[in-house]
Image (cartoon, rainbow, N blue to C red; front, side, top):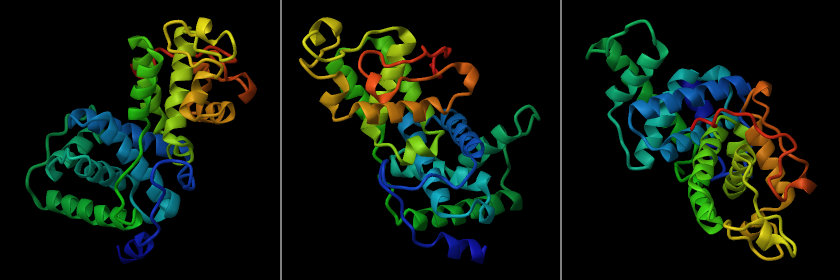
Length: 279
């Protein structure tokens, strides 16, 4: 793996969104890896924030390094392994390996891996890939995530619980996209998730202007300003972020958003027809 080690040196990524290149992996492959992390994270009882951190690590790594030089399955595992440590939810290497093996072999009735040479080889490779990942991240494992922004905005808007739950699902799903994870500021992702959730649930959001208080009754409208501008997100940034989240879903899901100029109100050119954005 000497060539891989050389390739992994240097090249830290952006902390949060807005400054890093998108992943060099095909979007479908990156999304599949992130879904595997989410499945493993659930089995390992990891928080959504830890899984999201792992997804950012994954996108940042492959934004800087060729997918041809690294095993994507092992790097997926290494990203979750490191993210759990970074978020103080450390899990044993054996547990991480067994969970990913169970996901990969779903339906085959595979048994947990016993302590054997095969296990030690897998563990050694996991640790090796963790070291590549750390060097690629320049040992910077802090990631700004949208989740806390979302909760703060929902509290300020006095948003109903159902809207918050659906918006949280949109935020989690957004990490399947390198564009949403690396090139979109986390506070914009949070606002876009609120916008999409409001469209899904047909909840009216404050549109601003003299009628803002009436339009946002019960949602804490900021007088004279669209709700998202109170959080530092322009109409254009909101629409860009919402479209990047919507791009995660296949066309038959019907997720679409309005042009930037129409981002006040519920902002949807076509109401999302999702079953609940993983909620």
